[in-house]
Image (cartoon, protein in one colour):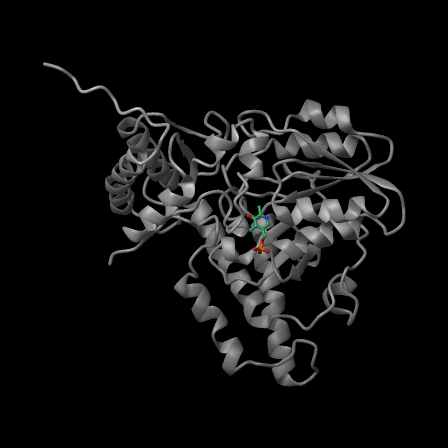
Length: 399
Ligand code: PLP
């Protein structure tokens, strides 16, 4: 059966060029990057090259990149590393963060850290005025995500970071869903100069799962959360995942090329046009549905749509059986029956949040795949609504 993948925010497919770049580091070039011999030096050179590539994507110094095991570890390293243990401090984050931040913040709140969770607007935005009002003299760190994994809504990050800095706090952003989709310029005079810490994950930019990075601005003192060897300039102990790091470097290079080719046939503009075609096609064919986060700036590949009188889980399964992979809520929370915390924080009723589906396109998604989805979704929604006790069938038109 034909399969169309529209769940790139859960994970992206590995690009063949990325796989080819990493493959020799499993069998041929297996050296430990800390070893003195030639095999070790070869691995070290590959790690250095990858670090340069990731730094180029972010417009920062290579020494400001710390390789980690992924987005979750980078988020934890940012929060625990920037807030010294046993020192009372205040952390500000938001109610729409990924669990990697929310759960880390909760753990910190059990250790002398007071945490404020900023509310979301109905569009899914964190308002700069809300951050301004929440700041306290002892606010050490502010952590607000760049783009939301469920809605794709992009936060006013430069403004939020500058407010945090003006109050003497550090600023972290989880850019897992923004990297490779939006230009990120962290240079000291660039638009994102006030960001001190930034999280990346490999498997959202067409590299494998289990590799990520944390940007740590040179001026920031960070305590390690893993204790062991002196890898990554004492910021992250553990033998480097050379193959994964090489893959992340290659994926960063390809992301930079993709972002630069922004035109109607490739790059973010092209992807946004496909997303809009999908969105418009759904909205024009189906009643009682709408886009969550409509009107707010969003990354090009994501749309989150509610279909009233439909259980998202049932719709995801119905579409899966027809060959379309999408997701209801965040994939990292699958199995949970709770409505999405992001959508409820935006003010959706639990029923509407449970009726919401995320379509997230990949760079290789085609117009033809979008049209395939457009043939499946209206029919699947209509079938499920037939079974819904709350759905009133439209009156038949009497001639
Ligand atoms: N942050 C965001 C916004 C995410 O979407 C994800 C994964 O879905 C993560 C963090 C966790 O990243 P990883 O899966 O690499 O641990």
